[in-house]
Every structure is written in structure tokens, then in C-alpha cells.
Amino acid sequence: MKAFLKRAKEHESKINKYTEEYELGRKHLANMMGIHPDEMTQEHINEAIRYLLPSGLFDKGSRPQFKHPKDILPLNFDFPFDKAGRPYHYQYYTLLPNYHCIMSEAAWRMECLREEEVRIGSTGAPPQEEMKHLSEEYEWMDLRTFLNYFKSNHSEVVQVNEHNRFVILMTKLSKMRLREQDVAFLKQFGSPKTSEINVMDTEEIKKFYVNEQGRKFRTKNGYRKSAIAQVTVYAEGEGILEINGKGIEYFESQYAREQVLFPLVLTSSLNKVDVHARVEGGGEMGQSGAIRHGLSNALLPFVSQQMVNKLSLSGLLDRDSRVKERNKPGQKKARKQFQWYELIKACCKFLP
Amino acid sequence: MALCKGKTIYHTLLGIYKQHISTSYFSTNKVLSNMYKDRVPSVQSIEELNALCIDDKPVEKKIRIPAKSEFSSAVTYDPIVQKFINILMRDGKKEKTREIIEQVLENIKMKQIENYHKATTDAEKAMVVTDPLKVFHGAVENCKPLLILKTIVKGGSGYRVPVYCHERRRLRVGINFIIKTCDTRKRKVPLSTVLATEILQAYNNEGNAVGKKHQLHKECEAQRAFAHYRWK
Image (cartoon, rainbow over all chains, first blue to last red; front, side):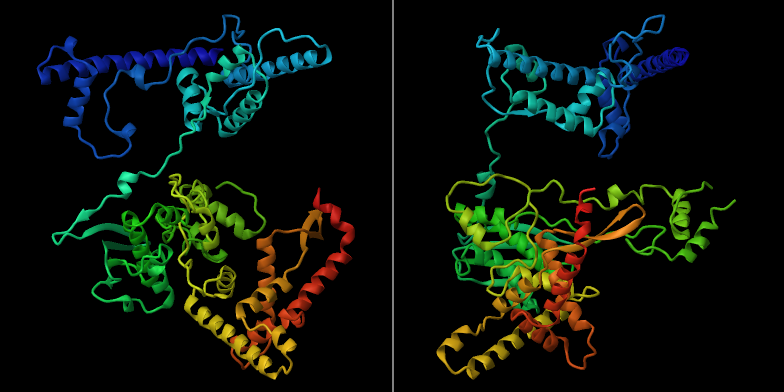
């Protein structure tokens, strides 16, 4: 109780101090811009700070900001208990009262529904209210929306396990026969699954350019490890293959050659298409992997939809993001560690 | 300096050293994270692909695990042979092991052709299998064990308990049996000839590699009394 009062007082003194600084700064800014301080809005302030203190940081929360301390500091302290120290909420002593309130309400509803079913089954009486199954499957809240829901409204920190339990409970509830009040309770936390499937954009796939001589072509980049390739594919060709000015003899090993030819063999377009490629960086297998990635992306508009499905299902259109692991301090290489007598020498630096 | 628990001196010193270095370098969640955790698995065999892609209907847009670099539609591609190459490889030298295994398959074919010409009647000639890939598959199948011994610690002492295992583990154990019988012999002959004889013998259920499997099965029978330790 005393600790709570202390924290509340410190919070108030903090807010008072920061509001004074905020007001002072606001007047100075208004003076600089030439506007009356009463007519200045938050948008004016944001524009001014983006002009005066530009930053290239990706994280928008770490860029310089100028806001009223109410928006930045955590929520104000409402006393959740009376003078004697008795809390208002009946689940205050679980440290997450609102989360457990929701879960216990859902469990209570399940038990009521079960009793109804038992009563209907044993006696032949009709139900007291209308009960129906849900017609569609419901999708529940994401992890992120779930965490924000509790953090912004009630300033509670929920964990990932509790989100899993939440999802399991709600799916159990949704599979029983429900009354109208139960459906209204469930709609707060979920919505019916949309049967729309995210389909690949046909406009992006079918784009191509036309040459001066009237030939269609498409260029795409391919990446693998540290190799970068630029691949252009010309339609209505004979089967020419060119890599950095040479043919397929640019690669010496059989596996590198097979990798380059694989998307052409899958779509059976070896003699119908011309390929010109330019490669830099990496080693032999890395360069061939980069060409394969660029080739399969550049082939898409000149091939039927059935082959496009094949290329996407086999995983040729996605980039391989595996890269060599970095070395770490305190170890010899990425995973290899020192022998124990070398650790003694290193620890001697930290001794007093 | 704080004391910390450890099984050996090495672990205690590691713990002491790591206290003074920022934990972001050593946090296992960041370093050992599976970067393909959220991706959908992709199809890795061409027969399945042909069976799935019949219509002109477009496919769902999802980020998939990319295809391996050995995956190709050539006639010589086989996933089990690739697994064998990866297990036999040492120090990251893949070209060397590929040459070894190409020699092995060639040797198998030469020996089977000899047997084909030695056989006199037509019935015997039909029994001889000349396809090296079929011989390879059959040999690996004959070396796979059904059960494996696993050490479970109960009451302070470790017991070896017979346990089921899935296909991937059985494949690996079977391939290890073949490789280890060939490495232990003192040989002045290249690895490819020794491997070829072992694989041919395993195809006919003879030899040391299959003998290791029979030995494992006998030990599992002997430890039959502890089989219930698998469930607590």
C-alpha cells in the first residue's frame, strides 16, 4: 500500500515536471515558426521536427519525437483498491485480472451449455433459448493484436503460452451449440474465416517488355550466398545460352550445369527460349544457384499456368537466405570454442 | 565473480567468462534460430509435382522453403544417393565423394554384367539385376534395423532400452553400418572397390554390414525386460 502511494506521487511529480518543459518548448517552437502557440497543432510540431532533426533510422519509435508526456509515459495510476486495501476486481491477486476474467467467463459458459444439453437429453424438454451450431469456422486474434489489446487498455503483460490457451479454449467453445449471447461474446475475439485465398498476382507475372527489333523479353535478378546474377529471357528463340560471354562451358562441374538447366527442363522449353546471363561474385555453385533463381522468375510470362504452378510449388521462385555464419568473440569460429586452458588466460583480464 | 554450477572445470570457466560479455552474442535463440520456421514445405519429387499440377487453376501465394541445389530432373538424380554422399563426406569435400560414388556404381554394373554372361540358362539371366540404383536401394533396405537401443537413465544408472524409431533415423543407421565396415579394414585398395563388394553382398543378405544389423536385433531381444522403461 505504501509502495503504491510512493509510486503514484513520483509519477505525478514526473508528469508535472515534463509538462512544464513541454509547454516552454512549445512556445519557443511557435516563435520560430511564426504561429500563435494556441493555433499550433501536433502536425505542425511533427513537420518541424522532421525538418530540424532528420534521422534515417528504420525504427520509428527511436526517431526524435515531441509529445505531451501523457502519450509517452505509461498509464495514469487509478487506485484499484479502496482505503482499507481491499481490491475492487475479484481477480486482482492473479496479476492479470482482465485476462483471467475472460477465460473464466468462457469456461463458465461452457459449463452452462453442458448442463443444458444434459437436461435436454435426460428429459425430452425443449431448450429455453434458441441454440445453434456456428456455420463457419472462426479465426481468433493474432499474437500481436492479443498483446496490444491487453497492454493498451489495461497495461497487462501477457505471455505466449497464455495466447495458446486462449485459442484452445475458444475453439472448444465454438464447436458446441451456442446461444445468441455466446455468439456475441465470441465475436469480440474472432471473425469467421474468409474463404479467399491469396493468389499470385497475374499482372506482375505476365509483365514483359518489347525490344527495338520487336522481340519480347524480361530481366530478373537472382541471388545466392554472395553471388548476383542478371538474367534476360527472350521469347520465340532457338535455345541459345550465354553466360558472361561463354556458353554452358563456363561451369566445369556437372552439377552446376544441371542446376542452370533445371527450370528449362521442367517447363519443357529448352528449344523455345533464349537466355543471356551476367554473373558476379561467389563461387561456382553459388553462381549457378543465382542463375537458377533469376531464370525461373524471368520465365513466367512465356509459359502456361500449369508450369507456373510447378515452378512455385517446387520452391524455385524463393530466395535461399542461408549465408555463412559470423565469428563470435570468446570463440574461435562460429561454433568452435576454446580449449579450457585458454579460457583461464582470457578470464584473467576480468579478475580484480 | 559469482559461482556457477557446472559438471566440469571447463563449464565453470565458460560460465564465468560469459558473464562479462554481453549476452546477445551467446543467446541461443538468436544464434540457433531456424530461419525457415514460418515457411511452408515444398514438393521435392517430380512425380508428385506432375500429379498435383493438372489444372490451370492458380496456386496459393505462400513463401516456401527453396529447392536444394542438387534437385534436378536428370535421370541420375536420386535422393538416397545424395544422402549417402552427405554422410560419407568429410571436411566439406563434396567433389571427391561424388567421384568415389560414381566409381562405385560403375563397379557394381561391371560385376553384374560378368554374372549375366556367366549364367547359362534364360531363367538365371532374368534373375540377375544390372541396374546399379536398384541394387543400391535393395542393399540399404536390407541394412536398416527395426529397433534401436537407447540409453535411459533411471535411478542413477543407465539402461539400454529397445525403442522404435522413424524412417530417417533407420536410413542413417543403415548407411552408417555400410560405411563403417569398409573403413575399419586395412586396405591398400581404393574405397570404391571395397564399397562395391559390400553393397553387392548386402543385396544378397550376406556380409558384415547385414551382420551388424542381426547383432543389434539380438541385443534388443536380450534387453527385452527393460522395454517398459520407454514410458517413464
